[in-house]
Length: 203
Image (cartoon, rainbow, N blue to C red; front, side, top):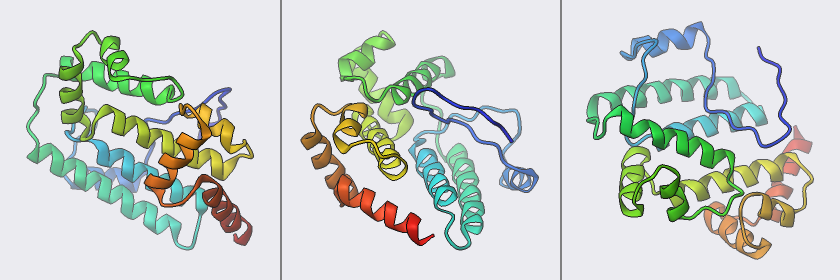
């Protein structure tokens, strides 16, 4: 177990798993101490996010769902490793992973494709193509997804006003934030917060 705290936004891009999951990792043909470059890789974030939600909410049999999601993650990594050719050399890919981590740590910045591409000294068109090839969605789609996920966490676990959450997650106005949040999640930020608060009270 680890104890740590953060004075600002905290982003995990790793997790530990136990001995049983380690055997599951090996059972699907994956090796230890090896870096896998999976393309596209957006399913990894999706599954890990589902695991985090189950752990946070702790509903009935949540541990079983978490274990099944870990197995699903390993199988999909193994499949992608077998089925997807490596389109780019690691030296081309690595700056994109570093950039993406920086972008996700700073979702409140006013990101544009030009600003993204400039950060790794690349043309906008080539940056867009390579990013989508690696991660399975465009850089702006990835950023929006991260902003909404961060907003969901803040709405569920803090009392920060919705207008402040909008600016924290990089939106120009609360109206723009509400419109995009509602479009993507199917519910408004206010309704989402109310639903999460109700579920916590019931627990």
